[in-house]
Image (cartoon, rainbow, N blue to C red; front, side, top):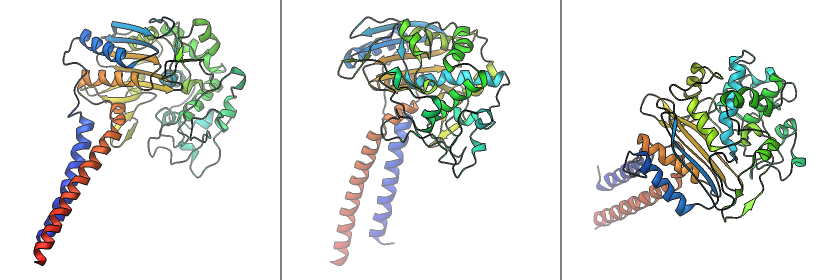
Length: 420
């Protein structure tokens, strides 16, 4: 075998090794360090406080939970004071609570998890497509595997008068996030792959209303929030205003009014850090609640969807990382305009968790929650990995370019020497 051919093969092998090493190293956290080397909760909270102080302008509520109990919490504000009972609009974090509402219907025997959602809908149905809509089941809507291709994203409305009906929003959402058509339809084979769909949760909102005979906000209040003692949590905009909202901040420190939504179940829950701590506590070992059975909670926290070979979604909850006890760190994040970012992480095996609700930063809550996951488990949070992708690809491209350049130089010298 000629030297040039050996050089080509060696270059290709080196590129493959470099690419694999950077990818695996990033996903496994080989060069990531925890926010603190100490296992003490007060050290973790101290590190979070320092990060918030250095990076954040706006409102933020934080709580650290150990074995189902809040062991430390703090709130900061650039405007009107906030505390653990202040009300935040938490965007997609509400999907986790919406999933609870749907699973109550399942436990009550009013809907079947594996049944087509169209079986229960009369006010609106999916537009015609090239795919079998019988595969668009309630369970697949919960796990974002129903084949919907909307990838919504709702930006909301400036006033209550602009809010669309559910049916109109599902047909074409006027508040669709930039670059999205706003049309909820089946664009892929149901069950084939995971594809995040805000529109799927708007369908589930309609399902709840059709089956229960109540407005979505009233149903969730009666069946979820009141039984759990979540007295400062609502999907009702007017009730949230009456409870008193924390100010919405933009990244430059200015305030903006909160926005109005049709897609309540997908993106417009209002809640407080204290109520989210209660929500986590009742799911902890030894927690007491009568809304859902432990069997259902276990099913929700199990893998129902994968992406890039990783388990990413249960029924209404994201699977962020292995918890090192044959389960997952679960929860949900929310992100919306002007700069709403919320995150909850929870380990069902231990009752440990973290809550960060904030406005004024686009990703700070998600970053804090990801730091907690790595601090607790040594595993990289899926969203932390996603945020590292751009830098990871830059390292891969740079390294591959250097390897290729070296290979070309060596090959050129070998070719020149051979000619001589």
